[in-house]
Length: 474
RNA sequence: GGCGGCAUCGUCUAGCCAGGACCAGGACACAGCCCUCUCAAGGCUGCGACAUGGGUUCAAAUCCCAUUGCCGCUACCA
Image (cartoon, rainbow, N blue to C red; front, top):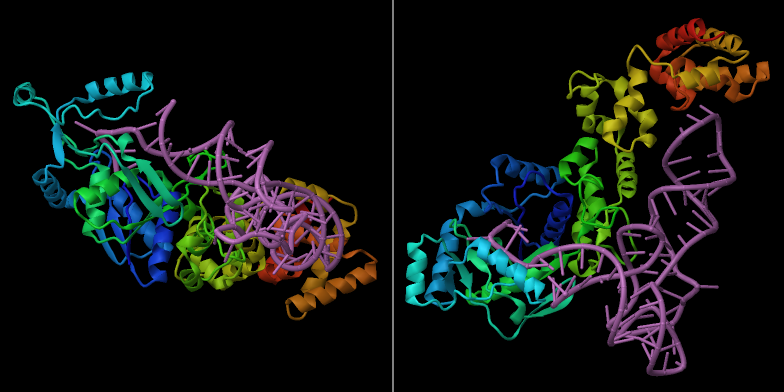
């Protein structure tokens, strides 16, 4: 089995496209087939090498390595011309001299009268004089295919089932543009047949192209592959995912700190499921379990909340050292580490105690920076609520005293000593823990106080307690 | 306008093909409780859906028809 992913290099890798690529990858790996990459860059105006690089990088990052390619349509012109010549020989195409202006004018008129707006086929039978006249007036021409007037084109889609249309409504569409480039449908059909693609898995915005392409396979006397049309990915507005309703490019997710394995897992469930609605899959497991026949038919809304949950779930399953490694870029950017390849234990410890809270790699720095950096910011609200209270002065003083005289500065000793202080002073644990947390971190939220103190260290803990005492406590 | 496709909790979905065990199951989100020094995480409970109308049948989420809504295509874009 041979499948392909065929994006056009238009600037970024669309997240919906990524899901298509994923399904292709999974399908081919499920059955030991080949996953082929083809870049559809026939629209020269919009294609750039830089855009191609974005696609390749993105796929690699996600672990969707291809077995063949990338093939570039712009470099396969000989193939399309050859195919065109075959059709000319067989008299299955003709030159059309109509200008774009004429065409759009006629289209408009047809629509007004409620007729199908397709090409009326008037250049199919031009006499010699007319052709001469057109040539002399310097008109350009395109090649159109002669579509059958009667009959039906039908195919059995793996996800949608049988889809049939009347060929009568298919007008003679363009194969070669006047700039000498093949159209999408033509290049696509020629390539898919040349690359011996057995299963075409793509978005369902291509269903209506399929009939045209089948006509082309027939005209070319080529074997028709299987088709599987995946429902679209929509934004929260129910429309096609757009920048308005959320991030559409893979890079944006990458930059926010989503794990590739989490993104994959989320994406695979957007349109596919197992009988028992399993949520979390190991990569290998996914390759085994994925089946096109279990894909849904209706469009799905991209739900960022669920992605966030899943990302957190995946992050929690990693060791703190691994998390730190993966977050190295963000840590460095915020000045928490100097060298991406050598992450200090302190940073890993800080991540360890805040691990359960991480949803995105990019938010790690703000979660742990106060445990690592020297200067911290005391949040106004926290100070007011926990430090500007009666009795806090005595409590903090006592805590400093305890810590100074503690044996080993570890969680057990700390807890034992401070709990003992609770008993002694008849104060509830919160009465002591809360001010201490704010005094050493400047915040009301964070890890348990004892692990917090351990990570900060004895020296710094005492300094901060003293500082808070001097500066904030009445 | 024409043609095609789709329709189960707010969202992703299971169930539909082979009608009954479905007063519709799971997951995210939300609410409450438990745990607890805070925030999370985790556990438990709750809230919440078969688009509408007809039919077929002893029995319909499931089969048929119609309606509605949404999406896509209708280009010398891909």
